[in-house]
Image (cartoon, rainbow, N blue to C red; front, side):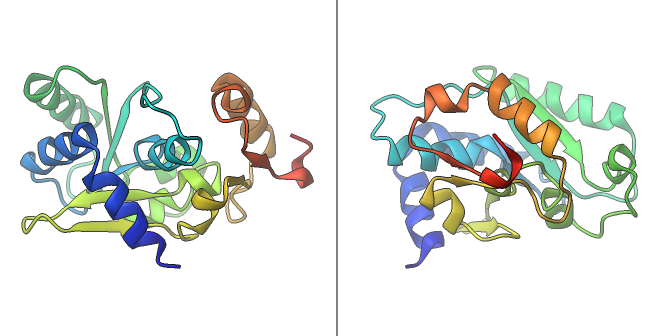
Length: 186
């Protein structure tokens, strides 16, 4: 099964998400993606036959710029995006500086930063290219998202944070068909 094609179809039918992608594209960031719940939740909502989208706490816009590691730049971009589309909370993070948070060697790209996120189905991103094609990054693929399986990230395993996030985000209540990694006693 072509999960990228299925995911692209799902996003293209979602006016809200396509508008978010168009807005994100306007700030012209290098190697950018809207990631995590933006993509993950769309798939899970679809598979749970939700008539209304599960609200997003924020939109994770990630990019890669090793020449400007300032968190102030991220705040300026957030302010710009908020002016363009105030209906959402924008969270902008340069993956060229996020390795410090985890005590890792510097990441070489946005995709490498996304590959460090807590759960496998969260390690996903999408961007809208100038020709309106969607480009995905999914270091573990999209299959797990479509299978409703939730595993801890095998390359950056943080089982305690994994458990805390599942509870804090109320995933069991929102998406009751999710199957969680039994190896982490979730």
